[in-house]
Image (tube, rainbow, N blue to C red; front, side, top):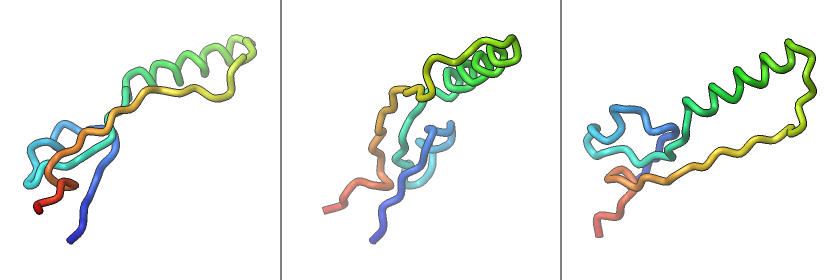
Length: 68
């Protein structure tokens, strides 16, 4: 027996057989923040924070649930 989990909750994950457990993240928000940081740096602004955290959510589906 093995259990598998993915990352970023791709659209097809819940339609696989068994459905893929995954860690859901805000990829749009991450990309937006990255672009803002790059533009700020181009404009000569200093970045106050070196670490940015984004909330995640574990979506447990069939690929990691026990069948017992």
